[in-house]
Length: 116
Image (cartoon, rainbow, N blue to C red; front, top):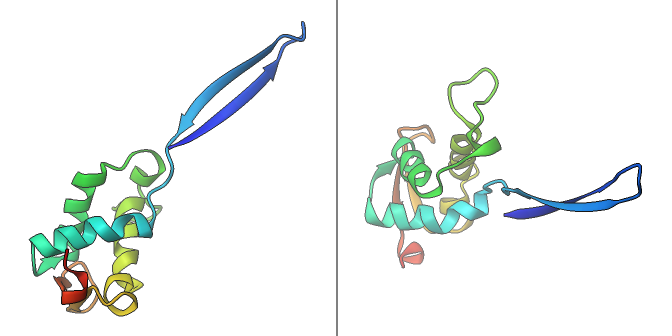
């Protein structure tokens, strides 16, 4: 969560300070540990199922919940799909094995390096 302060000055030179809270966007690194937890608990989970499980954990709001232009999914699901398409969990970190073609039907299994 990010706090943003706004300073306003009136004609009478009174200064008021108000605080607004702005939720930070969910990023790929934010998803790594929760994704590993879900994959360990549900070996063979598909990317589509992983999106649903992570959505239940993160409950995305704001910009993360916005529908992408020309698509039927939101920015949060894109971030999860990026985690898969960028091979963050499998090739880069070696924590999972990806089965399938990298689509929503791809399956995920944990490796010994990724176990809790």
